[in-house]
Image (cartoon, each protein chain N blue to C red):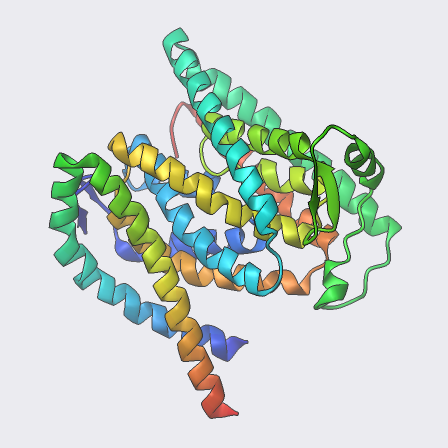
Length: 73
Length: 305
C-alpha cells in the first residue's frame, strides 16, 4: 500500500511539473482568449479539459501500477 | 505564478496540496469539500465568484477519479445516480433563484450564513447521535474490515427508513445495486433538497445528500458515497458550465488543484474498504462542524478566511 502510494506520488509529481510547463504555458494564452471572446466554447472546453485530465491521470497511474506490480510479482 | 484568466498570483504547489487533502475527503466521504476549498482559494486572494466557480470545476475532475475507483469497488448505483442528477439540477436552479431574491432584498449574507450554520450543526448532531447509537447497539468486527463485512450497514434510524421505503407513491423504482425499492418521488425529493442547498449554499452539497441517501432512501453507506460522487459529476458539470459562461471559472487553477486531488481521491476511495458504515458516518461528523466554524468566524469578524 505504502509502496503504491509513493509510486503514485512520484507519477503525479512528474505530471504536475509537466502541467506547469505544458498546460499553463501553451494553453494559458489560448484559454484566456477563449474566456474573453467565446464564453460558451470556453465553458465546454473547461469541462472537457478537467474530465479529460481526470481520466488520463487515473488511467496512466493504474497502468503504471499494474506494470510495476507485474514486475515485482 | 500568474493565472491569467482570474489574474491571481497563486503558488501551484499550494493548489496541488489543497487539492490533495480535499481529494482524500471526497474519496472517503463522497463530498465535494467546497467548505474547505472555497475559503482556501479565497485565502490566497482569489475573488469569491472565481473561488466558487473554479471549485466546482475541480470537483468535477476529482469526482471522476473517485467515482471510477468506487465503481471498480462496486459502490456506484448508476440508475440511482442518473435519477438523482435530474432532481439535483432542478433544486440547484431554485437555490440559485433564492439567492438572487435575497440579493435583491439586500440580506443575502446574513440569511445564508444563519441557514448554513443551522444546517451544518443539525447534520453533525444527528449523525453523531445515530452513528454512536448504532455502534453501541451493534457489534462490529475489530480491526480493519474488508469486503462484504465492511458493507454490512446497521443503522439506529432504520425504522424510519423502512417506513419511507414502504410509502407506495407510484411509480416505484427498484434499485438492484442498492437492494432497495422506493418511490421515484422520494428519490427526486431527496435530490432536489440536495440541489437546493447546493444552489443556495454553494459547492456540491454532499454533506446533505450523502446522509439523506443513507437515512431517507436507505442506501448502504458505501454505495451512498460512490453514487453521490457519480451524481456530483453530472450536477457539478452543469454548475461549472453555468459559472464558466458567467466568467467565474479559472480552469487553469482547477487543473492544477486536480493533480493533487486525483491522488487524494484514490486514497480516500480505497480507505472506505477498511471501515464499516457507522464508522464512516461518525468520522463524517467534524466536516459540517468545520463548515459551521468558518461561517461563524466570518459572521463575527466580518472577515473572509
